[in-house]
Amino acid sequence: MVTGQTAPPYQHRQDDDLWEPPSRRLARGAGELMVTLGVIALLFAAYAVYGKAWRIEAEQRLVDERLDRIWTAANAPSAPAPGLPLARLHIPKLDRRWAVVEGVTQADLRKGPGHYPKTARPGEIGNMAVAGHRIPSVFWDLDRLRTGDTIVAETRNAWFVYRVTGHREVLPSSVEVVAPTPNRPGVPPERAMLTLTTCNPKLQNWQRLAVFAELARSQAKTDGRPPELELKK
Amino acid sequence: MIYPWIWDKLPGGRLTRTVCAILLLAAAGGFLWYVLFPLADSLFGLDEVTVEPSAGQP
Image (cartoon, rainbow over all chains, first blue to last red; front, side):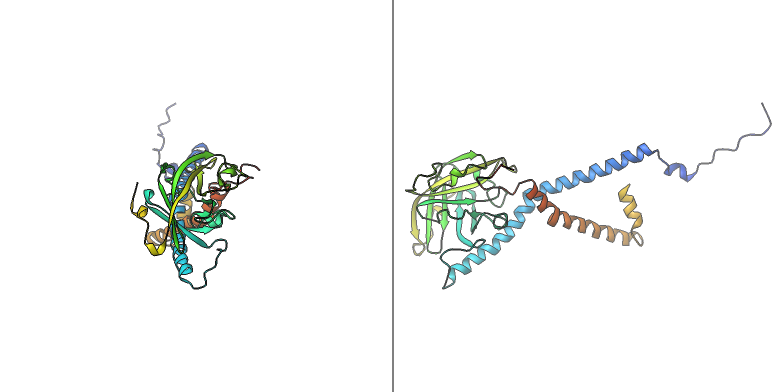
């Protein structure tokens, strides 16, 4: 019916722009949450690889300086206390060196590679076992070591040159790799061995990588640095 | 949703809000980096690199 009156023109209101159905608000909220969690996951991955490495590097500098102070002190302790450095480990092929601390607790390993308590010390008959994180500043490239590669342990008075004899990927419970005679628990040791352990594969922890080495020779520090340190085989 | 809401609650003008937002981000980042991530690292067992008899058992 025509009344002669026309409807008022539609007025665009600002509220129309702000209103959105609940389902859309829910979707936007879920989207924000997922993006936030994604960013946190990426940051955690960066922390696991680089953040931890950066923190350990900072700790290593302090431990390395402390080792020098211990070695120059007149009354250096014969056996290091847990958490204190006892030796340096050099791997020329990886262009790496670390101060090794006594102990393998998480607190010890945050300082760098840790020496398994009650295992042999550098140059001793038995198995010197050392654990380290699989991160760029520690044992990241341990899988690149091959038979014949050099690992040098440095103590206050001597250098001990070990040659890699092999490696094994084992379960985390395979304690035989750090036995006095590696892989042969209960067998009395006859040689000076070195075993390095780390997690395997990289950034996972369901296996351990164990690298074995045997003492090839030693020399006193008064005879200078071993030539193997200059070689990157 | 949450980020515009936080932005609206920050005091002052655009510059003050930007500074506050940066400070909030830094605080959140510090909490993640120094508290939450180390905790998560231990929780997920990514710290474990040793061989031990009890490994893998509850």
